[in-house]
Picture 1 (cartoon, one colour):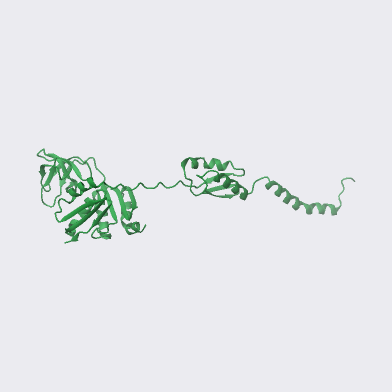
Picture 2 (picture 1 turned 30 degrees about the vertical axis):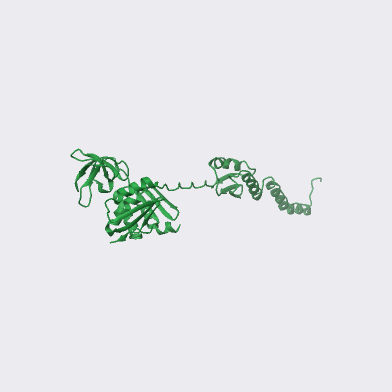
Amino acid sequence: MYYYYTKNKIMKIVKLIPVLMLLAAVSFTGCKPKDADIKASIEKTLKESPATSSVMVMVDEGVATLSGEVSDEMAKAGLSSKVQAVKGVKTVQDNTTLPVAAAAPVAITADDPLSNSVKDATKDFPTVMASVSGGVITLTGELKKDQMQKLMMSLNSLKPKKIENNLTIK
Amino acid sequence: MALQDKYKALTDAATTSGVSDLLVREQDGVLYIDGTAPSGAVKDQLWNTYGQLDPNFSGGDLIMNINVAKDASVTKVKVITDSSNLNIRKGPGTDQPIVGKAAHNEIITLISRSNEQWWLVRTDDDEEGYAYARYLEEA
């Protein structure tokens, strides 16, 4: 018989099966880049643009998660597709943020209009003397406690830099 | 940051009481709180809170500029001077000539809110001019 196997030979083949399966598994995954390699490739891509150079990336089973700050809107808009194009990336989770716009500096009223407004605001408080210099209103003299809030409400709305309140409470 | 902590009760109150366009900025050792209160009562409440944190308003480290949302439907205002008449002037400024007077507690017509300090008003005697907004309240 040509196709005759001894029991011994069959046993040898059976024993080989797990080894073959392992080999097959290794050779299949070998075709796909490992997460660490994908991460390295993405990082290389991110470093190419200064806008994305500080973005951090994590890769888990081909899912790339991006975090950190992208310095401009254009770069952020194109970020996902750029990373998606890296070999081995299945999906991209973009958790990056744009920098928070810095608040506009506080506008301080110039001394001339501020002096006039302060004069208007303090006119009805004859015991209060006020001077204005460099946006700072300095109050001297005296005032009844129950009048203080009324005066301060007016002065605070004039957009001064600061109020130095040296008033003596009567 | 220390200033924002010092006045946290104030900024929290502004947020919860519905102050819009709230802007809290710290610059050169002074905290600036700007915003628009939905009503005069909310503004007063915030000033009371400020008064609790700094009873004599003498800290020199806070400028709170809270306006009250303008209600365009309001056309009548009440004169809330302590007891005296309210001067009505030709222009917005105490250097402007007095063109008329409104009595304490009188209800007069609001024509426009020219700025935060000066409102254009008209009395029943047809005297028209600017009055200091501190002495007017929506009637």
